Image 1: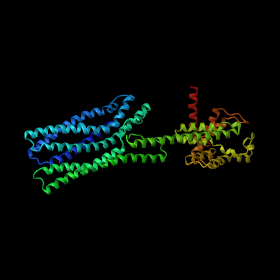
Image 2: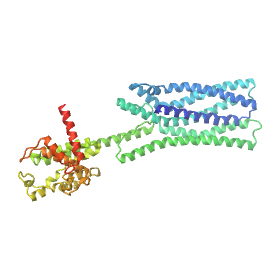
Image 3: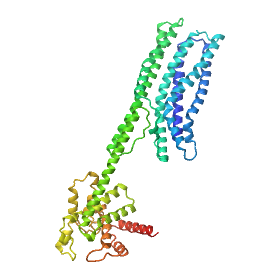
Image 4: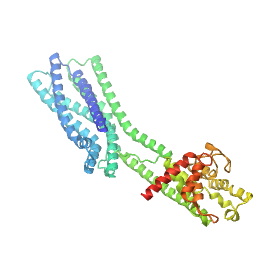
Length: 501
């Protein structure tokens, strides 16, 4: 069942429920318990009501079909709907609560009241009913009050049902054409006016309807006994009070729902979920939701700029480090590119790949703490000099720690410290084995080793890729992680095939 079918079922269910309460609930009490009717007159009154209801349903159904047509056209259409049709459907969905009120106050009310009046006049003139013609005026007044209450209830129920339909139309229009139809809204119903009007009517409705019914009841001869009067009055007061309470509850729900939605969205923002909210409101809440979306957009823009600055900072630091040794220029950048290639081949999440890239860019930052005469020495290193070189992962971790990283950036540290560990446990600085080595360290180790083997040095020429590949294969499971070596080889093969193809 699609959302349009759910919408129609909800609208029809709400309408039938409201009509049943209004016509058979309040109407039956107002007519049958207020008036003193004989057996044949009860049949006549029942016939009048039945025929009037049939007429009312007929008129109102034809108007409903007209109102629903722009929306139905979208959901019953094959293929992609045109933009003007989508915008028209959204605008109709926005207006649907108001159209519901019009249907109830015009075809619904008049479709019931006019035929009832004509039939009642015919029955009175023909002797089928022995009630004064003045009661028809009272009936119009009572029917109008009930119709307003019915319209009020239907307005809030329809508003809630339209919320999901509007959201679906917004999503489809944005996905298909990149246009947000809510930004072109032509409907605005003041929340202040809605609450004031509804509250005023709910306060006056019980008094007016009860006063009207009492006027009829007390005018009927022989019905002024106190016990009979309060028995009748109690039933009427109970029904009217329940309806008024239900109306008040709907008003409260109409305010509570968007407030809860906003609170929920702010809680998600606090947790890092920066998705905008779908704005389907046509009152003051529309401004609040638009403001929320502007806030989220501003935060996302700020975060994007911060991320760009952070990425540039990492790139500059890596470039500065590589510039210290002209023979290893670009090493950190290439290691980061190889590391990202491996991670993508392993289907890592985007956020994890981004952290890995940062860790790889700074993996050799600890070499800042190594003396030039040791770091740039062209000949073979002494044991003491090599021991100094082996300290650079730990120095690098301490340098980056000193920056006071945010919690989100802390995962980059293990890659810096442990990219020289070996799977067999004879690496440095902590001689970790296998899965004891943090995953960033195991992965960067493959990328770092490959670039080191294929880069030129003062004392040797960089080896061909094919030879470096074979060394990586030989060292799988002893020096390097098997999964990451395989992923690197597959990624490089795919990359080369694309370049040659």
